[in-house]
Image (cartoon, rainbow, N blue to C red; front, side, top):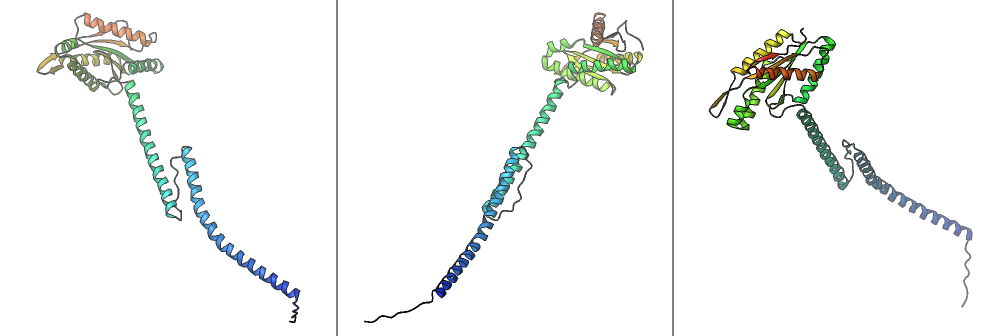
Length: 281
């Protein structure tokens, strides 16, 4: 046997090897780029909607119920997620508006009930006392003269005893309506308790106040109240006092008007008694 000796060029081999390695690396880099670009796009297509959703959730948790997400996701699942969030946010916002509206209505109702008589709908004693204080202050500040009138129904007890409380309530409502319809826009009529009413006549001279009181007394005296076939005449005793006496406080005027009303009852009922110690305008 013999030997065959082949001599190779080492430099050429190394050069070819380097070319081969470089080619392989270029091919691998190209493949990585081809894989990375859609992967990045896919990642962004997933992460961006999720980031928008997370930001919207944080804003809603902070109280911004008006936040909405633009529906821009590339996948059906993320699109449904964005649409679902927007629907939920709209429902929450509508529920909040409904709740706010109910709170405002309830607050307004409570405020109304605090100063109105539930039976007649007229201002109650609390509202009357506030209005009287304002009238007294106005009479001192701008000579806005006026009068305070107490009204006590004369035969209310007869209706209650004969027909029951339902009839008595109906009578009080009818009297409240009559008084409200006969007064001027600037006057105040209140039910202050039981069968007692009070009037504040603003910007009214003594003569006009007496004329209004007499007119109301005649209207109540001629009023016929009917309940289940039974008819009643009511009548009322009225006490009238001026509210422009600078020496008198609202409490003094209340006592004076109440005393005048009591004097009307004591003197035969169904009449007007004007306090003798009023300050005349």
